[in-house]
Amino acid sequence: MTSLRAVAATMLLALSIVACTDGAPHTGTEVRVGAGVFGTRGWTSWAYRSMDSGLCLQIRLESGDTTELCGIDTNGTSTWRPEGPDGTFVAGTSADPRGVAARVTLADGSELLAPVVPATDVTNLGFYVIPVPTGPEPAVLDILDGDDAVIGSIPLD
Image (spheres, rainbow, N blue to C red):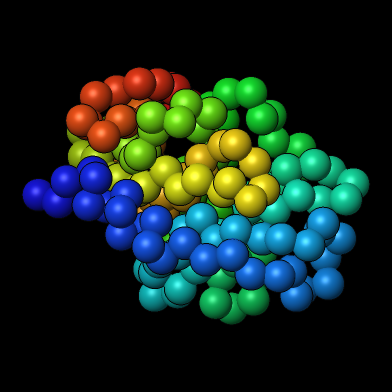
């Protein structure tokens, strides 16, 4: 099994900061906080500040479809469940700097894992995006530290 540190380190190496180019009313900097394939479609996720709506998290599908959540609370852990191409995403933030991974436990007991990626050029929060395929529903989200200990937990209903 891959350690949470290795997963987090891999994502941190993939972290890229780019100028905003899609014409949306951003303040100028986007931080890539996730990427992968969901079903048969690629996706990326970005944290940025909007001129009108504060801190935002956007998920972009290869097809060009996007979904975003703006006005994110910068004081705690949050979660969001947007629709995906073959299920949903569990996405959100962690304010605890010890958080290196997010784990979703599904109703059948299986687990999905993703790194918590810092977006230091945009906020003091870390972001996670976990694709959840159609099937058993997400039951619990845990934020894990570098020793795989749970440092925060949110029931998902």
